[in-house]
Amino acid sequence: MLYIPGNNPAMLQQGGIYGADSILLDLEDAVALNQKDAARILVRNVLKSINFYNTEVCVRINHLDTPFGLEDLEEIAPLQPDAIRYPKTETVEELAKLIQIIEAIEDKHNLPHDKMTIHAMIETALGVQNVFEIAKFSKRVDAITIGGQDLTADMNIKSTKEGSGIDLARKMIVMAAKANKIDAIDTVFVDINDEDGLRIDTEYAKQIGFSGKAVINPRQIDIIHDVYMPTEEEIRKAYRIVLEFKKNKKEGIGAFAIDGKMIDAPIMTRATQVLELANIDFNSI
Amino acid sequence: MKIIKKAQSGSFESSDIIVLIEPVVEKSGRNIEIDSSVMLEFGDAIAKLILDKLDEYNITDIHLIVKDKGALEPTINARLETAIMRACDLQKGTL
View 1 (cartoon, helix red, strand yellow):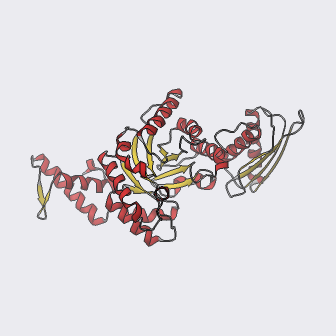
View 2 (tube, one colour):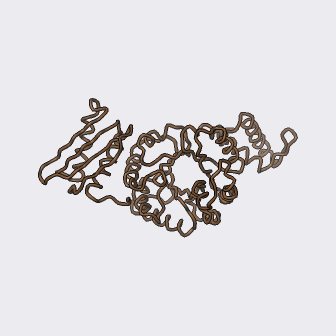
View 3 (cartoon, rainbow over the protein chains, first blue to last red):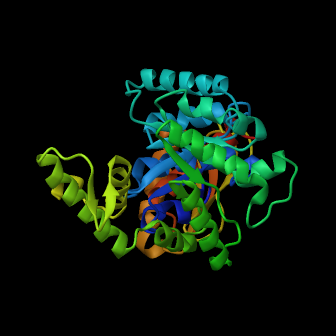
């Protein structure tokens, strides 16, 4: 997920060509306080007329406790981007308020309530403590994301490359997302010149269960895709597992073995996830 | 709509446009100055966008200067709208 500053026309109009799976048009931290109106109007115009191809489009609005949040929603929600990212989500009460406002806007414009989803961003210790409840609160919440920089500031700890101070928070966020069958998106790696560091950080994010990672520069996209993309060997193995599973299922056999290793439901689930990442349709096998 | 104060929007960055607006004496009309890095190719199109936007807000008296660095239509429209809202003191949700 590529962050694009909401007041930068050059990056906004090119958002769909960087190769990111998802772009985040940012009205919050990337916009100066005296340019909030300009960014909001620019993003609204861009959403109306720029083709982002197959890239998922998400807009990060300002928090409703600021003078900008409500106006952001009123301008952006009618255009129904794929998702609204809500910063500094701390409680289900504020999530309820957000959804109530969004649905009132959708009703006013005769729009459905089930198209645009919400990404709840966890950036404070209180948000981390409440993350499971936040993740399960509404079907509209389809991703939980972590804002590492704000979280380290809230915890009054030093921001480090390995992110040891926020490690527990990352794992709690992943667990809450997985428990509710939604996505968990990792925080950005801020040193854009440290490609090895980005690779190590992304490998760790993948290992602990994050579904993806946010980036602040298009140069970081390829490394993240490289880490998340299954290897040819993994794809072949997954393909074989699914093929055998389908054959055995026809014969009424649940668990079976490949190369001496038992294949059961969890391994099958993992194999389908690998094929999904490789864009191979399960039904075509 | 009446222009009541000087206002500005946009930037000199590539793909952006800077819009400057100032109030003028009533019934003095529209004084529009356009400078663009793509003036030969798109000068007329930029002028039309400006006139359409002024018509949309029913602005008849204005001094408007634009310096364009290759902005696309949505950016031009957004910067014009921002500057007009600011000049008419109607901007919402900002500082």
